[in-house]
Image (cartoon, rainbow, N blue to C red):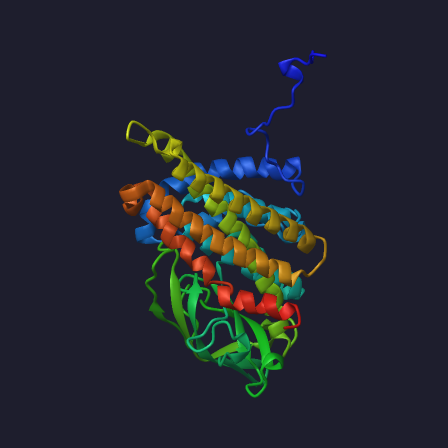
Length: 404
């Protein structure tokens, strides 16, 4: 018997349907829409300029005034009281800036320094650092890596020696994002130089006095030049007998390794979603190019070789996104899924670098030129396989999690 089914009754694939994930509510999507609009209007047009001049401090203040800094922090400290997913939306919205360095500098402040202060800090510390941080009045940096200790956090040599009601800090830090502009730093130190994991303590250290001058004993040794992330300042910092009040010790003395390990999980998760979002942006830009650029009488996207590149990239982007979202759901619901966070960071970073390379290749000679912004994305993306834990360290963490 012949089917009487009409074409309207046949279920057809809808490739243009909404892609909202189940972890996001309409409120999350409303934020996404408004923040994307702001990023595209006020940040993206300056991407090229800030590659030469660095992003200005006023961006953080403007972001704070719009309520985008305090999204996940309690209202009593000036935040909006939102859930963890708002930080993912923020990272995704910032990907439209076209500036990896800007996004990284802001993320250090919002997702790497302020959360530990909110979780570990006492009321006085929150009032002195979290509140002005949420207002965008003070800029934060994170001091972990040293010239002789990167992935081996337990091997750091910066010391904090108790002297009365103060600690005296000596040592140096390197590759510090926001280091040349920050008002304060969340600093990883050794209070017991003979211990490894159990000798580490965290301090909030003021890097400037009330007049904006460097704290006595503190100096920016070098401003570092990098392959990518040019809009972000990166510095080597020196601490010579810097005296810090004992009340600036954050968390528990000797438990800093465990505190900073928790911080790194949040850093890696937001890094993973940043990689996914960055890959999506460069994918979209390249897809548009492939539909317009013609060779041999037709758009290059019509060639199977190019079409399959897009299919492969899209699949890997989606896989990384789903892994990251699912892991974020677990993290937001009180779990501590270190293995999966590590997997998400590793996979997303590798995927993003692969996508950047393929997109540059599809652009051909134009991809190598500054005009299209592809070469900048290519350079900026590469840091993700090193920062917040290199690929090799991520693999080691995953392998050990299975008892190997």
